[in-house]
Length: 419
Image 1 (cartoon, rainbow, N blue to C red):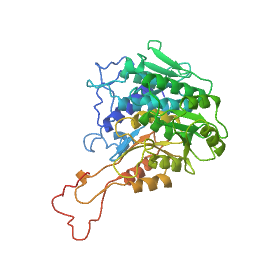
Image 2 (image 1 turned 60 degrees about the vertical axis):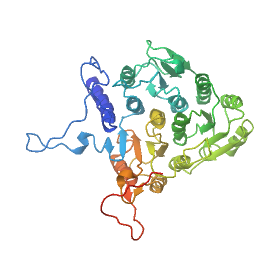
Image 3 (image 1 turned 30 degrees about the vertical axis):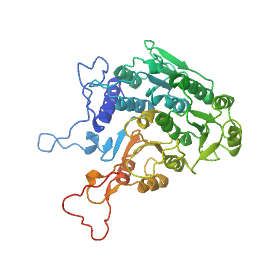
Image 4 (image 1 turned 45 degrees about the vertical axis):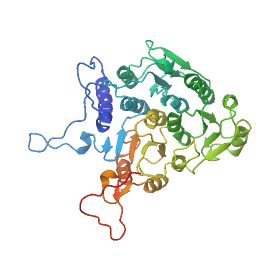
């Protein structure tokens, strides 16, 4: 793909994301020599009816259903770097006088664990969306997003415009705060230190994830962004020294461990319990089941507690763990949804299907007074196929509930209470 065609594709992805999200896309960023005052980012082409001198274009060229269906919206990047740029622009459109982010977080494009740990910076009050960067240069997608977002720093970010994690390259022109460490546990512990400095308070909870299987760790990114609870890392049969030191700083804070014994053994639980009040495991037999258990989980100040309709959700493929970090801002704004994981790009897995059926919305007489579910899909059709998206759309669809005997089902809609 040539540089010109790549730039055009970046623009189309971001424009389509904003279009289907209901956001105007006119001239929201510059590409190459274009500026916000000169031209508009190209949007998906409009199909013409046959007989107008052109043959009809297939529906996919409109961006539907590849980018959106009635209950889903896709951030269709070919890799997590493009997805992160698309999510950042969807959560901070940066046009019309609306708020821009004070800072962004640059994460190495090769380090999924750093991305998940850094997701805590996506939430209030810092609200720094994640962008991905290489070791030696800033990718074009990331540079394009930075140009649009134009972070300027704030008191919440200690005037930093960029939080640079690990070896991620950053523009020389932007003031940065660096977070370094020799391994995932060390980087996560340093992110926790930075979080504490920025928000000046202890977390309510600590989320532990394993470095053994990234698909089990992915849902941690969404919760960290949503709650401000830090993510710390453990191994299958041990707790790294950096994690132990971080836990000692939070000796009165309860911990929750994501994943089954196969990724973090009971030995790990016992080691952690020596340092904090208690550890509760949230698990499923595979990443999909584990993510569903987390979405349902409720422990007061910890857990999504999604057991009824009317929610936002985010779905990503477990083979692309950095998509969890890229999508984290979607769980800290808009529809505030948990991350659900699939390892099957073609069909909705059974645990996720069952969960969506459990929270499927319904109505009796008036669909306009009902609750609705909506899902963001992260990645292109290689990550989550159009067929997968269609199945998901059907599972999310509002349905009419059979009323009790004697209650009318036709005529003027009856307003239903949302209490």
